Each structure stands twice: as C-alpha cells, then as structure tokens.
Image (cartoon, rainbow, N blue to C red):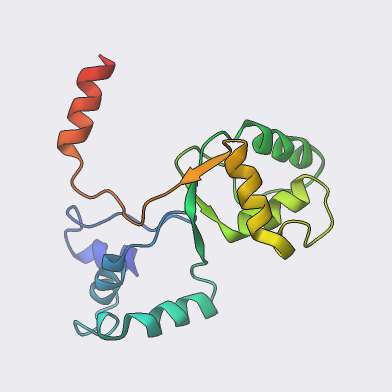
Length: 159
C-alpha cells in the first residue's frame, strides 16, 4: 500500500517501508491509515483492535524488551545450519542493536539442533542465560525519531 500511495504522493518525510524484525511504532498505524486511504482514526481510535488483527494475520509478532548484543555464537550456529539447509525463509543473522523477537528463540532451537520447545517452553530461562552471556541487553520501549544532533556528535567523535 505504501508503494501505491508513494507513486502518487511525496513520501520523503514519511517513514520508509516496514522491515521484518524492525520495531513497530504507534505512528506506523497513523501512516497506514494514510497509505490505505482510510479516515483518520480508523486504526488509532482502537489501536488494540488493529494490533490484534495484525498479530492474527502474522503481519507482526511479539518483540521482547531486549536487543541483540554479542551475536557471534548464535550467528555461527546459523552459518553451520544454513550451510546444509535452505534458510531463505528464515530471519537473517542477528544484528547487534536489533530487537529480539520471541521467534528468534524458536529459530535458535533449529540452528542448534535442539528439540522443539527447548527454549520456548521456558523462555525466561534462555532470556536469563542470554543476558548473563551478554548475547543481548535490555531495550527501552522507545524508537529513535529526531537523531540529527546525536548522529552529529557520533560523527565528530568517530572522526
């Protein structure tokens, strides 16, 4: 719907296309109203209803309040698994700073050759273990928006 809308409208000030694994923002539903030609408030007046619908259609999935940090071991397991198996339908390698999805632990069971449910039956245990090994870190429930100043300071520091 974004592609159709942006073919006829200037979308330069809008968020780009949604990316699998990227955090969902509340404002994403406002922009969906625009892209789909819906009346303002169609989604925003009952945000929980569109969240529930999006979950039921598998358009999004629960994210955990963590971000990947040290991903070398897990990505190594992915590389080993994918050398012998088709991984084209799986999420790609984990990226430091990327939000952790519940389904990441299901795929880790596959990459590591573990029985289904090894992690998912006790999600908290694998979360605690991953935190203790510094494979992930707590994430804040926010997404960056106006980042020019901070990125400028990064550029200065890294010069």
